[in-house]
Length: 376
Ligand SMILES: Cc1cc2nc3c(=O)[nH]c(=O)nc-3n(C[C@H](O)[C@H](O)[C@H](O)COP(=O)(O)OP(=O)(O)OC[C@H]3O[C@@H](n4cnc5c(N)ncnc54)[C@H](O)[C@@H]3O)c2cc1C
Image (cartoon, rainbow, N blue to C red; front, top):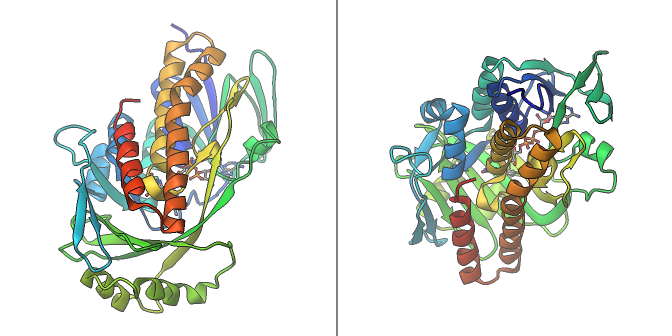
């Protein structure tokens, strides 16, 4: 059977775009990927991954590399500010009986594993490059690039992220990213032996957590309400995190607080969300990942649903003789799951900001994680 989309362009080399390139190349397509950053860098500290993400890694072929370079573990420990454990959330082993149900890894390490797999897939990667014009007819998409090249494709996959230029170009009326009233502080720290799994301390409004990212390191994240998204000078980052942790007498958090020095690297990120209403495609151009569904990290599943988009899109391209039919089937399979993650994460944030009902928070968390465990 001839593949409906033989020549494919991926715009954006983040986790979603790289995954799309890998899976489309597996189908036998000729794939180009353009990434605007000449250094193909990925910033931030660690990234937490649930069983559904590890299941996707198995399909992508990077699970063993993840297990070698990241950290995998079962369960999430929920604790009170003093340190007493109130619950252990189970994390089903979705990637196989021999693979723990969750884990974490440094972002740049995951980006490197995916970049290696992208190049190994035969994808032609052009860094420091993006599109300047895009025009389509019934048979294909003509794209002009910043490096002066012009090419025609059967399909363009837009994965250029939350502030997508492609979304802006195709859907100028689409909603803009929305600040949610919370911010996240992150840092990478040595891992004490007693921290073996993802661990969260539930304060009235502030929520610190740690997650091992390797045998020797873990990352700290602290989510706090910030009603107005004001600038914070980087010189104030460390003291701010120390102040947030002051209300948590748990010995692990106090040790972290004491260990933060003016030299500690702290990353600050105001939390934003975006759910673009359907459709997610226009003719032969389809948008995936944060470009159409950027979530706050309350379910630690933003990267997961972007990577899953790539798997499902390639699956549907392999099943349909026409690109338009594949894109419709893709959207049909993805909409409800992505909507659930974005909206439930936003609701969890609202409950935290209001210091609201802990029962509702725990129920929503459980229901969402059970839904994420379903097959895609
Ligand atoms: C504070 C925070 C914590 C998070 N924690 C987690 C977590 O623990 N677990 C989890 O699963 N998710 C988490 N997420 C979400 C996750 O980081 C994102 O969902 C994921 O990185 C999105 O990947 P993406 O490839 O869709 O987009 P992006 O990562 O934004 O990638 C877009 C890529 O496109 C490139 N690009 C941009 N514009 C252009 C252009 N015009 N042309 C070409 N290239 C372009 C960019 O340089 C980038 O490489 C978190 C998010 C935040 C904000």
